Figure 1 (tube, one colour):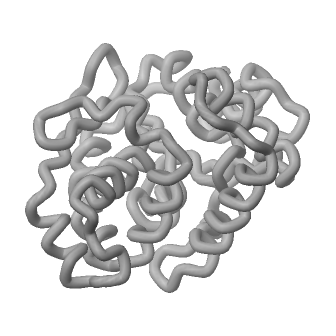
Figure 2 (cartoon, one colour):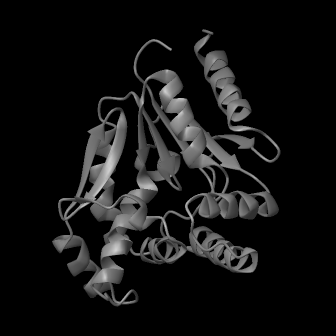
Length: 226
């Protein structure tokens, strides 16, 4: 692929973005940036501090007082809040819904924008999220939008939660996912949708390996290299 590129992978919850992005970054020797983790980190702190999620002023205070730091650990970006690696603590459904809610506020998105762009300043990064190609890295070398049907996305999310020993009732996951989809797609600021120049890949029924191969193939066609 020659020079180190910026590759963005956007899409809804459960489409396989995280798994595919990690595998792609490893395949290319790139850094994996989970931008959704940044919003989850803020959301996690908001819940801990019992911040009013409907109060823009309270969220402004949250952003100005919460220390969110990215560290490159063995090629993967780790997120630290207040000097502590939040790890799996930010992966609950409650934190995910809260992250989706606070991401509708301009102050929240702006506070994290520079942090994300700085992480990709030198290229060699696979940035995964919901507005990577449309807002954060509009100049990215390659933009992909990963999707899958709702049924498969629910099953994947349930499997992920069960694998972590967490509660995973189908109906609850379905309700939460539909709510997140609605919040993400209807927000006034940077709504979830493919950018005009994104390559859309439907991952329904495909393995992680197959999706990564499809992405590599698309990149190779654009660069003229295998």
